[in-house]
Amino acid sequence: MARFQFKNRKNNGLIFFISFMVMGEAAIAAPLPQWANAPAVTPVAQLSLQESILRAFARNPDVTQQAAQIGIGEAQIDEAKSAWYPHVGLTGNAGPSRQTDSSGRLDNNVSYGITLTQLVYDFGKTNNDIKLQTAARDSYRFKLMATLTDVAEKTATAYMEVSRYQALCDAAQRNIHSLENVYNMAALRANAGLNSSSDELQAQTRIAGMRSTLEQYQAQMASAKAQLAVLTGVQPEAIAAPPAELAEQPVSLKNIDYQSIPLVLAAENLRQSAQYGVEKTKAQYWPTLSIQGGKTRYQTSDRSYWDDQLQLNVNAPLYQGGAVSAQVQQAEGQQKISASQVEQAKLDVLQRASVAYANWTGARGREEAGLAQSESAHKTRDVYQNEYK
Image 1 (cartoon, helix red, strand yellow):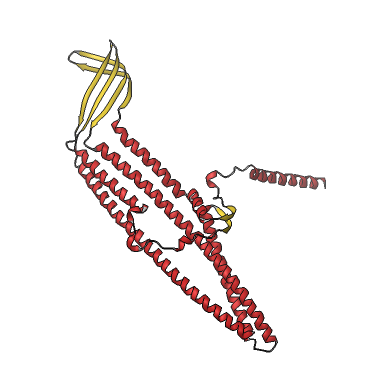
Image 2 (cartoon, helix red, strand yellow):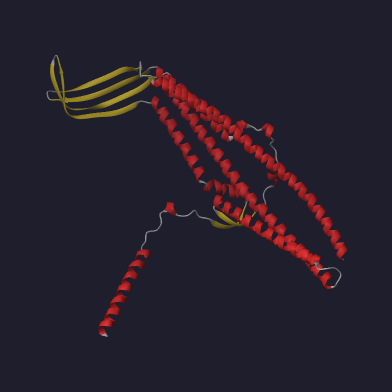
């Protein structure tokens, strides 16, 4: 009996030890790194269209990437400009080095000094490189503007969807309330024997159908709210009414100003960058002139001395197996691609504008039809109310 109790105590102790290890491991588990945390969504009381767009700008990673790309473009311009500035360097060597000529042999052990190189003229290589990087930087800026436009469009669309389905839900609830009044009136008349129960059944069927429609509207509104929350990072309890100016259409398809559209401007600057790339590559046929100077100290086995140098250096390619010609062909091909991208950008803008204009025209038509239907419904309601009185 004592052995059995000891065994039970031993088993209980083992179970306690295992539980302690498991719970302890969970308790001391390392927290998730910051990059693994889920994107935060904060509840707010109300949200306006302008605030939602500004929040989307601050939240969207593409905006941050394009802004950082502009900084990279600025650094690339500075790198290209640095070719015109003097390049200063230090040199140093340690170890045996032997020079033999007609005057004898010279053993060097240590050498150190300073060198300076100044570009004089390179027939447009550096200037075209600076223009190339500047055009690329401007392209990054317009890409940022295009990204902001795209983010604003998506956010405004989600915002309007929430507002639209909220209005549809309110209209469906009002319709249900009206149908319930009709049902109550039809039930009273049926109970009084003034008419059959078919009107009562019809009202019940319409109420059930409208409630089903309300559920669909509520589900679609929840989906639009979820999309808006992902874009803005907030979950509003209510949204403000959108500006009335959004219903206007001041632009037609015949007068689109492509010169002010960021997507087209970005493609055009890329085309200019490719053109400067062609000029830069063609300049490789011409020599590069630079001044090289230096002052070096040599420590030899016999004596020490300074070596001063100031020379005009000319670097002219004579034959490189067709490498420069191939590079020129590549640059010209890239220029053609960039030119076609400008046309593609304009076609994309025209397509999006055409779809948006068609949607706006259709919405206007549905609005007018809805107003006519509403007037007809009000007249029908008045007729039925007069008949049931």
